[in-house]
Structure formats: structure tokens, C-alpha cells
Length: 217
Image 1 (spheres, one colour):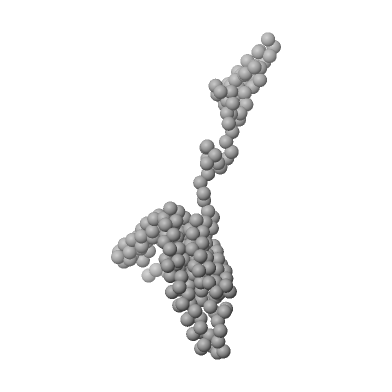
Image 2: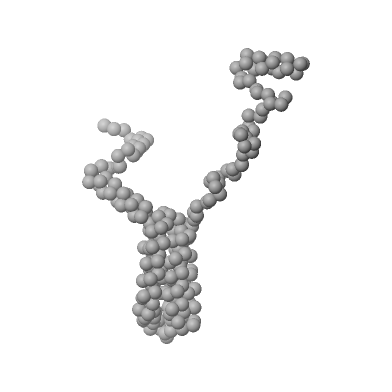
């Protein structure tokens, strides 16, 4: 009975102070930070930052430069192995593997850069390989050897390069390549409309601050 009178006095004091009353359950105050268990008696606690159901979507943090650097290193190693073993197919397989891994582990905004740069990255890796393994007594013969070796290798692995590029485009289509193309077209369209108006700055851009010491006539 004494506890009930004390609880009533405390409730009246909280109401007078403008605070919500504290409900009692089994003689103990209810913790407002405690989650409501509901009719089931228990509630599964969700970890912060994790979606309901435990399913997480794959999201890569590799930038466009990182993807291109990894592709170049893989192509360079494959080209060096091809020259060492005497089989150009190794260089082609290395390019196909790099063309598959780059869009898979690259960010969504890096897909367009990866697709457009993939053949150029292999060409650069092949030129570096031919320059490292060139045979010639003078600079002229060395340059001719590099160009000849590069052209012959590209002609030998052309079908593999085409297949690797197609695979890169297909994977990039599922990783956000259409969004990158639409964003590029929107940016080009906005820049073209801005140039056609003849304005000095885009609409809505903040005005340049006045230069100190400059007096208008």
C-alpha cells in the first residue's frame, strides 16, 4: 500500500512537471529504450547497416583508375608469359580474364571508362612487353622490332580480343553501363544548351564575388 501511494505521488509530480507518466509493470518502471516485445514475447534485434532478411547486395569500391591499373598489370604479366613461353594465346587469355574482372570489381560509375579503355590497356601492355624484349643493335632496329612484334601479336589474338571485349561490355551492362551512358548524354546536352544561350556561367550558379579595390564607374 505504501508503494502504491508513493507511485501515485511520483506520477502526480511528473504530471505537474509536464512529463509523461511512467507505466508500471510487475512493480517495476518500464524502460522507454527497451524495444516492445509485442504479442510474440520476443523480437529479433537487427544489426545497424544490414538490410532485413540478411541479404546484402554486392557493391565494389574499386575506382576506374584502380580497375584500369589492375587490368594493365594482369595483361602485362600475361604478355610477358606469352613471350617467354612462345604462345600468344596466353596474352589473349590474360586479356579476357582482365576484361571480365575489371567490370565486375569496378564501381558503377567506372563501367564506361573500363569498357572504352580495355583494348587500349592491352595495346599498351603489349607495347611495353615488346619494348622490354626487343632485339636490335640500334634504336631504329629496336623500334621496328617493337612495332613488328606488336602487329603480329594483335593479328594472332584478334578473335580472342574481340571475345574479351564483348564479354566486358555484357558484364558492364549488368553493372550500370546504361546509367553511365545516360549521365554522359545528359551532361553533354546540358553543356550544349548552356553554350547556345551565350551566357558566361550556367543558370543558377553563384555569382562571382567582387574583386576588392575595384571601383565601378
